[in-house]
Length: 240
Ligand code: CAA
Image (tube, rainbow, N blue to C red):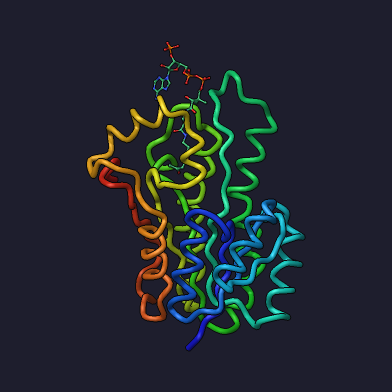
């Protein structure tokens, strides 16, 4: 059966690789993006995956956005909460805006998007939600109190929502990627990133496709007994 899947932050990085992996499985996929319209146009032209623009940190925008996806395509079966930003800096230099933006975009979006789809999933007794956390939500990271707090929150959110969905056919799992070869990681200064790569036993950055294949696995129809779990994919950098 062909499922309808929504991937936030779906036109770049891990989100784009995931959207492609789900499309390859046969899903009808929607990639949600926030700002980079140019990139979204190229992505849609190259992949044939529809892209929709809204701000996932805004509750009403998520309700409206999901309503338009469902009007166009039908009920959403699978939600991948992948959208995320960094605003790195040590606490003594961080302003309130950079704290709040990361909390709202990375963690608030998981509530906003889940709230928009969960009612329909409960009615239909089927749903798959995967939230993209991070190694830095598990282990912390210098200069990332905002990001680590949001990602750590995602791991708690996942376990709580998994309990609520379990009897309704809805599974909720998290992925905790390590350092993956994306634009986000490329923004880390080289002198810092080189030291991080030295601490990855596999000896390299991960690939977005290596995360996408795990998300595909967790969202298969026959993955119904896997819920509330966190799958760490980090080249051995943090064994949790
Ligand atoms: N542990 C201890 N001390 C550290 C440190 C660390 N990990 N990193 C830096 N320091 C120290 C430095 O040695 C330096 O001390 P000295 O002046 O005594 O040498 C001091 O802290 C200041 O360091 P910076 O010069 O780097 O300070 P800055 O203010 O210019 O930059 C920063 C701070 C923005 C946090 C910068 O260090 C940085 O960008 N770090 C990368 C953070 C990171 O890993 N982000 C991940 C982004 S990707 C992602 O998040 C995806 C994912 O899920 C994995």
